Image (tube, rainbow, N blue to C red):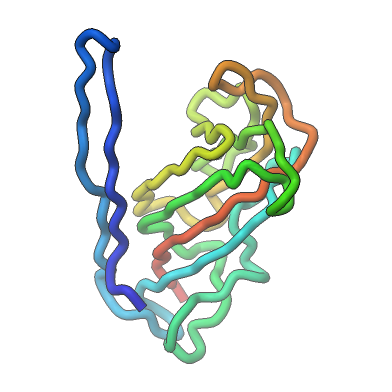
Length: 170
């Protein structure tokens, strides 16, 4: 198991005539090893986001990875230290979809018109550090997308891939 998460980020910015770029990294090193009641560990999940606002990570089905015997299933109060979420562009791993996903971070209802929502369009990848956001706080919903922004409530399913380091709060 890797002892840290690393994301390399490059973005092209500004108008074509004055184009520039910024690049950097977004890394996180776990503070302590995972155990049955504490520490930090990896999870990986492929999840279906639906048109109903729900927890992105299911506490009944997602287990910590690695050799921490007994660390087991994630809990609603586990904290998200680092997370990468990838919109696969599909509804089930193979069927193409044009719907996007909106994330809500404060246990609120995710919606296409959520002011502080985070939008993922088809193919987008987002990497976040959310040190005080719990598994129960992170909600997701599908949305119609147009011109790179949410344009209405979604009606289908979007498949996302998630890799995260969580703090096991016991």
